[in-house]
Length: 76
Image (cartoon, helix red, strand yellow):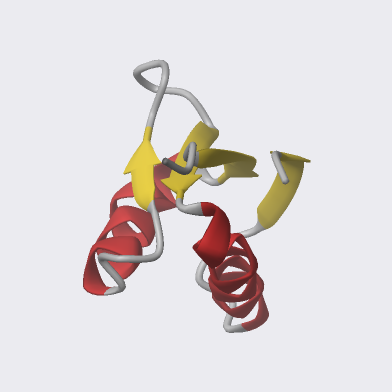
């Protein structure tokens, strides 16, 4: 069995709902978790097979100006 990997990301707090919706659309890539309420830190839980896909989506979110993204930690 494979263990989920975490990507810890700092984002604009007002954009968390939108980012969550984007990842819900790509439902197999990652699950968005907010460890603390009203925080700018989110965790993306994903299969080891989808870590690169999740990172690509985060890059596109920032590239398109949806939210500033700061990747704090990636478990590989």
